[in-house]
View (spheres, rainbow, N blue to C red):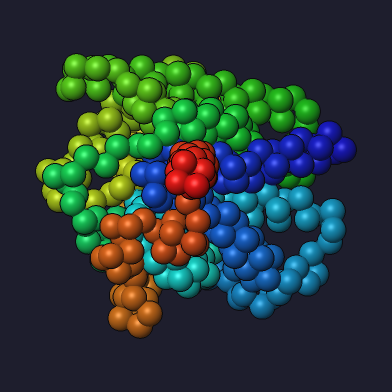
Length: 431
């Protein structure tokens, strides 16, 4: 048991690292230079707000109320009644809540008011994330996705990625397009940061997926090592396959395989294998990764055809990747996996595929409807969107009074010294 707690401490730290600094670096590098600090700040603030709120009421809403569809936020208020030896699991689930909220920020880069983000975070966590986490992760007989529908979700394909992807799409539609999009090129300003962030996300994702094993009464060491080995291998291999799938589609569609494509392929594969990590064998993991990498690479172009400005491709990667991974459990799962269900390719028929599809539908509708209510409430009170002038000048300066790169200080200093020297020389000559 001591080894399990040590394992969970490491897994929890890894998942927290996924938001700060990994996601902050990944999104920050993809942003324009005038927005990078704001983009990173959105991740840091999400950690602070959602983290404290989770301890106050989120754990109670997510894991209280056994046998209920929704749980009482005050049943375990501020962890009342939770023993300290369970704090590590509380912190683990807290990191899931944090990164789910932070993922949304990438879709609204450059134009969402920082004050609106600060108001959105607690409302969305309370109304959308905590209840959905209860449906998925508490897995009682009465929970909507896990129990009544029977959809498998090992580590958050529905509650995390589909949930965040749908919320991102809703906010994008409510905000409208960035000034100049799509005619103006809005390229990532620092792909080195993005690649570094993608690598850190990959490392942290081992905590996310492998740490999601439930060590309940009756587990023995052999079962523990079997399941953690399966999830670790599946997470790794699916990501390899997704990189190749993304780059292949990118090469076929655009003639080049890019570093941004490789970084995005990493995330697409990790997203897709998240719900399926414990349910499939390594062949299924490779297939899910390759399919997700290819489909997500294709899906990110939808925004240009359909006209929605998803700044950093949250919809194309997290919504699409989450749907792919969740649905394909019904195709590739095996009875010796965590869910104990054979998918279509292993003789299980269409039952699991139907359950997984219905689970996706529930997550999309629940997140879509309630995020719309929250977004409209903010839009017609304090407002969602930055002023046009501030958007053009850059949200870093408008919201935070800072710029990421002081590119002109050396030049300005040199010019001042040159001007002073010239003035002194002129005065001497005149004298």
